[in-house]
Image (cartoon, rainbow, N blue to C red; front, side, top):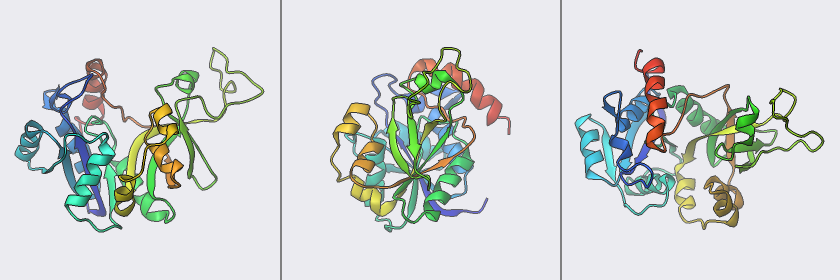
Amino acid sequence: MSGQSYTIVIPARYASSRFPGKPLHLLNGKPMILHTIARAQESAAESVIVATDDERIRAVCVEAGVDVQMTDPDHPSGTDRIAEVARVRNWDQGRVIVGLQGDEPATPAHHLDLLAGNLERVAEADMATLCMPIQNVQDYRDANRVKVVRDKRDMALYFSRASIPVRRDLSVTDDGAADSFPAAFLHIGLYAYRCGYLLDYHELKACTLELEEQLEQLRVLYHGGRIHVGEVEASSARGIDHPDDVAVLEPLLASQFEMH
């Protein structure tokens, strides 16, 4: 597949309060980070780099022939880790960077390409991300599923763990009938950045909205940044936050990726 003019950076740290050593945990006999790298390599990106703070992760990636950048262990987020890679490598401000979290081994490669293409196409956007329609009342109500509302140009207005938008004159019913909640969209936690904005983001202060919702993308909106939100019908992307998630991801990987 011919390379597009964008780079994928995969932030992967060893320490995790809920799942220590997560990037090296075996999924179907292979370290998680190598599954995530495989998704990135299936895309049309011109290069793939793993950004880590741990020599064990670096060693696994180097053995697999993957470019690795060692980074500060004290970064508060994956975005900050990606920004360090951009600074160290002195990338041009116009470069498009897609961040793929190391614990997202089931992310479809075409979503990565779509993100990069959307950001290149929409000049006013500083970042790009994706969403998909909510199909059931459980997801609409679930505070662990982040929702997003957009303007007519698909630019983000707000992200929230709350059920947004709210239909004022009709309560959501327990049966989850199709007309019992408004048209709403789940946020898919992938981001593309323009390198120049990524470096500026690193200097922005956290805002109250971000701290209340625990959503770092709200820092962008608070400080006047613009985020394009492309829509896809559905996504198999699912992060691994806890050891219990492994039982869900292994059959998903086997059925959708490892058989091809």
